[in-house]
Length: 221
Image (cartoon, rainbow, N blue to C red; front, side, top):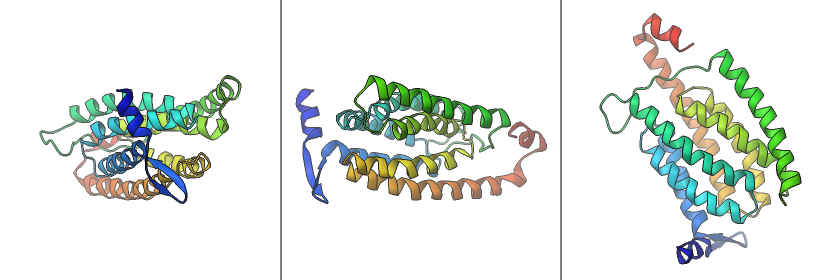
């Protein structure tokens, strides 16, 4: 196991004069595949995402991004819930599920905003006074906002794409600042994939709207 971790942390190549490890390469590939799978509403996005979480746990721990490390552990746990929830909404196909896309309720919106604000402040204080983190506030924001976005993704709430877009905008300069060049580039790709996912989910929801009964629309409001 130690040999495997050592190999994953070894340099695969250099990019802009910065070494890129094998774990960052694997994280790049699995991360891109996972976000594409979510955008296309594919069930396989969840196990690919869990593999991506394992890669980023190793990567972020080594880069001193402790909030991000904890986030990946939580992501892996939440991914099992999301996988189960999507399977429960499955209508018999192994590729795509029929759990309906819906808007966030007012309660979910207010709770998500409040939790993200308070969580960011609390985590930033912990990172500032309890670790040697050099970037406590953006690290804390990415942690807390990502939890809200992951909940929305698992529940197929349409607005979760807006949260992911904001997270990507914060993450790109954060990763560049920590020397994680390939990961920063990955998050540029994530940004465009999230915009694609937003457009695709909107198109899907619009196409399904005429088929929805009044009761179904009310339940999703």
